[in-house]
Length: 211
Image (cartoon, rainbow, N blue to C red; front, side, top):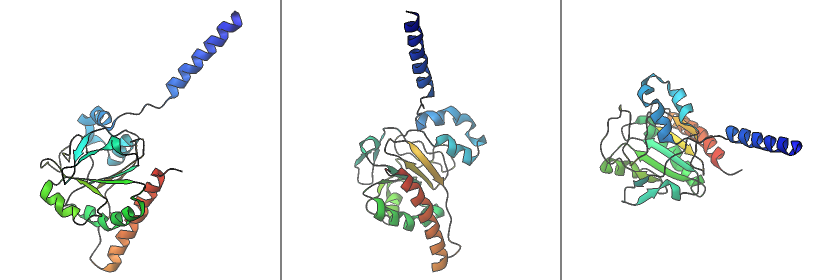
């Protein structure tokens, strides 16, 4: 009886330890709400760390054609770009992103959330690969405000451009913020930016793919 009691205690302790060591996944919305009031005092790099590892929600969004887009229907990882038509680094990323879509559209879903409403978002979409789903903002929002887009529930608080690399479990595994702008319109300057964007984005996408 004594040995049975000890064995039961050991099993209980093991279960408790296993439970306490289990990683708890927090939603993106919940994580943001926890530090929303102090967000102006948090450095950008720290914000990226805080948001990485969170889970995106199951919201519904409307694309440019009025189709309903749901994250929970995606079985593939997601390349999620928060962009705006007035953002020069955002525009500079487009050639690299279009090339990446050509290579990975069978393995990754590509979604653009744009701060622009319908008309301006159509202008952006005209320069994007047709495999990219474009979600316009439902209304105009302040680019300097806390919530920088209004697409139906996804809370974007970082600058433009921001790329969220979301794995197949809907967990944000990496976040890239900002990007270079060509020093001029020469082929050489454009190629430098293209090569940089291709390299950094491809590295993050590869990490999303099944081993």
